[in-house]
Image (cartoon, rainbow, N blue to C red; front, side, top):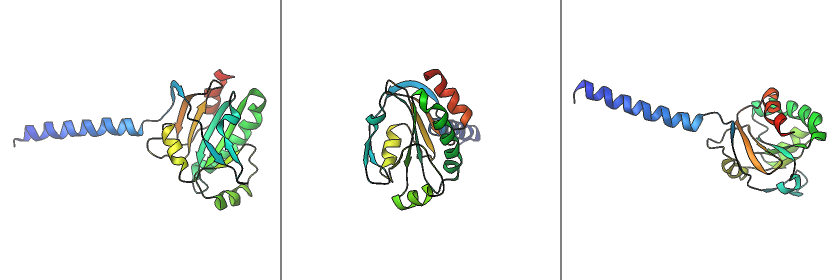
Length: 170
């Protein structure tokens, strides 16, 4: 094989890998509204909660884990935002990708003012249905009051970004 053919093959392969990586790793963000897949999960008291419980509200649904440092970093920001926007029809919901004991231990160290549901590993399927193609944590989706997913965020969701996404929905 000539060196020019080898260079072309390598270039084509590199382009394919780059495009694939860009598709898989691209940061989620604003999107065309898509229907929200409802779910039912227990809280730490084993009480089942269906996501329709918050129907008609702007929902910020955060998949997180106690062992995830970026998750733990954004939780205090979500607490402050829940306080600020609760009377404006906004509801934060945390879905822990952890076992119940770890979540209970963590909740004893922080006063979270929004529902925390125990999703465990099974909730990863829910996150995938909501666009989390790579299994990232934290992973957050914003659902408008009409029940459509309008934003996906793989990785940390900073306060400024949250405000930018939810303000037009208020």
